[in-house]
Amino acid sequence: MSSDWCTIESDPGVFTELLESVGVKGVELEELWTLDDDSLAQLDPVFGLIFLFKWTPGSDTSLAHQTPLTTDEMPPDLFFARQVTTNACATQAILSVIFNSEHKGVQLGSTLSEFKSFTSSFPADLKGEAIGASAELQQAHNSFARKDSFLHEGRQHVATGNEDVFHFVAYLPFGNKVYELDGLQSGPILIGELEDESKMWYSIARAAIQKRMDASPEIKFNLMAVVGDRRTLLEDQLAKDPDSAQLQADLASQHAKREQWKLENQRRRHNYVPLCVELLKALAMKGSLQDLAKQAGERVKAKYQKG
Image (cartoon, rainbow, N blue to C red; front, side, top):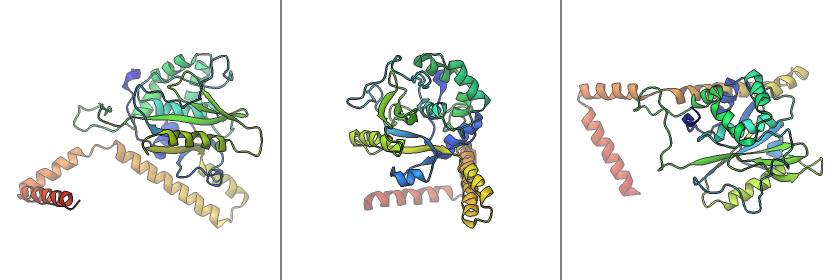
């Protein structure tokens, strides 16, 4: 069911494996700490940017003087979907980028190619419904859900009213224009045009993101770039310059990064409660549990008194 999508962690390793699990190739995500042109140029090709910010449910996510395009104003081939499924905004924002990428290095794979073709004539709300109803996308998304170890097996954690809620929007080039795609809006928002070929599209996106950051009362943001698979790019460069020690070191670093992502994702899926329970049982049998609990309580108390 479309209502059974769960919250997942905003992490480049999570989103990269999510895309690869549904057949996407040639794409990965990188977390950004700066938006200057030089830093982004080092990541080229940059297919899109994903911006996460704290959101109050029910509030308008658009900024002042921003008007979504109507259906008649939208480019006919621009993929835009309304968000009709709770917790699907992260996956939907990333799909918005890769579905609209005009770069030959982005390989959607059969699952997403068929999905894009099937929904190409759908209005934005039905595109959103189709995303929420896709068993393949939901399964890939929910495979990274934070498990609540004290619930019955198979159930995932769902955010409560006491937890912060975050929303994802996508920024991307399409044709000679730059758009903000926000599934909570009625249509895409045109944020600028590339009148000068020397100007990079993300310079326009940077200004729009900065406006969002300036308008937010809280500093709770995350920014990621959807870029080409660094391993493929480095392998192509090595084929031309096989003796480059720097390229060899960079490629080894990328493979090490992927192995670390794999390990972290395995840990995210693991339930550590049985291990903790057995450790507590062992300590109790040795008669040391009460003393350790008392010592821990004293350390916590001392920490608060000191603070």
